[in-house]
Image (cartoon, rainbow, N blue to C red):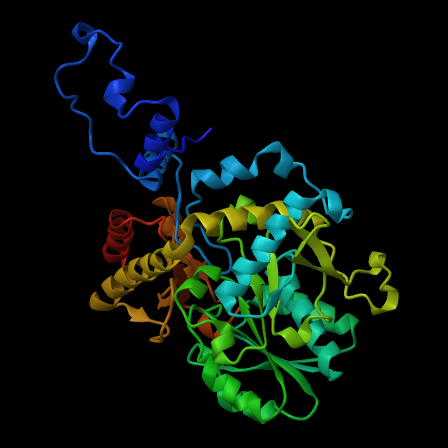
Length: 441
């Protein structure tokens, strides 16, 4: 089990509780002659992430693969406290709160989850999690069509291709008209968007940072949509970016959805994942799943309850908005622990991600490598490489998962690799990675 150290404040409180003023007083019964007289030459302490990385390097010295792969799922460090608290039996075995009066702990965690996501996005309400980012987008689109009874959806080609594929399945089944908006220089084409807008459009879907790593101009898109009474849906695959960029609500977004894997949930070979939907208040009775509210019980004590339940088994029947995601409760809890642990320092972590990614991007630029999209980005960027697929194979032999090959999804980007950098990449690792590129350019 991971060790979680005590702060000096924690130590002082424990000393006061047992009636001593200092650690020296605590150990005064140990005879002086057996105490260590000389100061121990102990190396400088390592941070939790440094120590964990060092142990991993020792354990997997021959087989460890350093990954610069992102493309929708991101390798972030998970503090020990997340595993420690979320693995407690009362959390680990918890199930859906069908009887909310006896599930106060679960309801409290869900309420905190909703509060934290609303704070990050600036939205008025958030539901109690979704299966994953792709299905959360599909549910957000269906929510939009329920709100304005329109059947045409416009989605940017810069939205994650897997998300668009899931959306195609949902819209086909719901007999909706799904159209794609072209991209220009790596970002959504506002001109093509305007050309496709008409009175039948229910919503426009954009991702930012988009699948190519670029931060979209959300305010510009919102301005285009404002005169058309069209819902603006933003999907996010790297939620850490929300800590650094302007809140979606401040950019004119009506519904924000996406993936929360980055917040305390491991990659685990691709799942399970954790989606979310946050929206303006006008969507409150159209949102799938459940909403937990804070109240007081008969004794006047703080209590929590399922305020809105719009699932079919809650007697909504044909008017149900569904969303059965019982198995995501534990992942939502891990997100709550992760965000509570970082608190206001989450912005510092986001800034660190951007700085490290910019450090590598600048090295490529200064060395004459061609950047695919010279646009604002967060922690992911595109790089043009001749023989990109073969070069990634060479990198893997050297112990690097060098990035994501875009040619399979975008025919005009056959020589482009998408590279992601997070706090898991130290400057030394970045330098080693870049050195291989320099050597084999």
